[in-house]
Length: 313
Image (cartoon, rainbow, N blue to C red; front, side, top):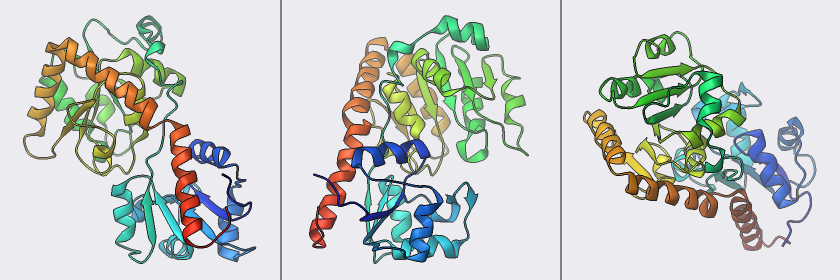
């Protein structure tokens, strides 16, 4: 079932790659600045606009920070807003309670992120990663909201594992230098996506205590890579991880460091359970978060919306 051409004048999805995947699946044309210009100028018959909803006060628009009045204008003109998580949708509802706001979690390429890409020798030779101990992977910019400082504290209390941090260091914080001072930790400032997929497939556990993430792609990427994840139960994280099945959700409180350590120890001492959780994570990534499924959800959501509003599909 197709959507009538030109009925979608504005499509905004987090990440250029994600946007074009969805657009191809829906068989619609998407431009770049032309999308927003059509919204602002009201050119043509704008019957629907679909906006990705991240935390509005921090949203980036065309790679620069858009003024609030512009973002508010675009959201106000939308008939339907599709957010990347229920957490993100809730943030939009606070500002636009009168709008139809739904949530569809972004997908993952389970062919690109795949356990079969495991290659420890390649990573050892290129990045000097030490695989003598189990690897705990952290991927994200080194800034306070991502909480690499908490992961460093966990690493200090978990000498039986090696912690590898991949991500750019943000000034004025100097987390990278602090990481490299630890005996069982390594900081890699940058890594191409192809190597990221190899790194995740070669790691034992993914750790991600980041706060207020709307839809952290790296979580489903770790799932598709076939490793269990330990993530803070904050923002949209809990909408991807099923606690105790494909990873663990750690409550954000004064005891969370001990909870992270407890779950890490549990996984390392129970190889069978770790493998079962890894298999469940991989299965969910394929079945629940594939781009084909995400595209079908978009297609059904848009088609149902058009039917309800007496539009042709």
